[in-house]
Length: 222
Ligand code: AP5
Image 1 (spheres, rainbow, N blue to C red):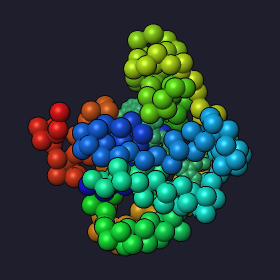
Image 2: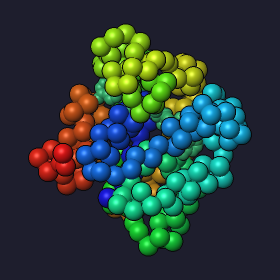
Image 3: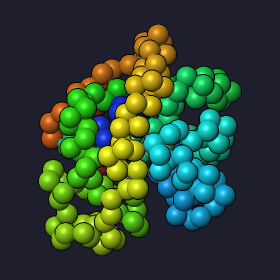
C-alpha cells in the first residue's frame, strides 16, 4: 500500500505512522525525521535544514523533493510506503505525482488527521522524543515513559525538539494553514482523502485509520 498522512503539527502523524507501517509491513518515511538525521550527523543538508526548521519554515522544495525522490527509489519501498510530512505544499504534491507516474504506481489513500489547535498545543508542549531513535515518541501526560527522561524502548535520553518552542509552533501552524491545507484539496480532487479525527486515545485513532484503508486489527500481520 502507498499511503500519505497529512495533518497539523502535533496531530499524531508520527505516532500513528510507526504503528500503521509496522502493521502493514511497509516503510515509514518521515521528511522531518530524515532532516533531523541530517542535522544530527551535521551534514551540509542538515545545516541548511536546521536554520529553516528552527523558525518553523519549510525546507526548500528542491532539497525536500530530492531527499524524497532518492528515498522512494530504494527497493525497500517496492511493497509500499507511508509518507509522513510530505507533500507539504502543492509543488511537492505535483512532484510526487510525477515520481509515481514515472514508476507507474499510484497512491491508495490519503489520511487527513484533524485536531483542534488547542489540543495541538497541548500535545506539542508535552512531547518528548528519544535522542537515539526519533520514532520513539512520548508525552509527559498522555504517554509518559516508565522512567522519567528515558526511552522505554531503547533507554535513550528523551528531549524536547528545538522546534517545539511556542513561537515556532505558532509559525508551523501558520505554514500548515497556508501551504499544506491546499494539498488536501489536491488529493480530494483525486478522490483519495479520508478525514480522521485525531482526538481520543492513540489506539482509537489507529482503529479509525485502519478502517479508512479497509483493515482492522484482526487482519493485521503479527
Ligand atoms: P515534522 O517532523 O514533519 O513535524 P510536523 O508535521 O510539524 O509534525 P510533528 O512531528 O510536530 O507532529 P506529529 O503529527 O508527528 O505528532 P506526534 O506523533 O509527534 O517536520 C518538522 C519540520 O521539518 C517542519 O516544520 C519543516 O521545517 C521541516 N519539514 C518536514 N517535512 C517537510 C517538507 N515536506 N517540506 C519542507 N519542510 C519540511 O505526536 C505529538 C505528541 O502528541 C507526542 O507527544 C505524542 O506522544 C502525543 N500523542 C500522539 N497521539 C496522541 C493521542 N491520540 N492522544 C494523546 N497524545 C497523543
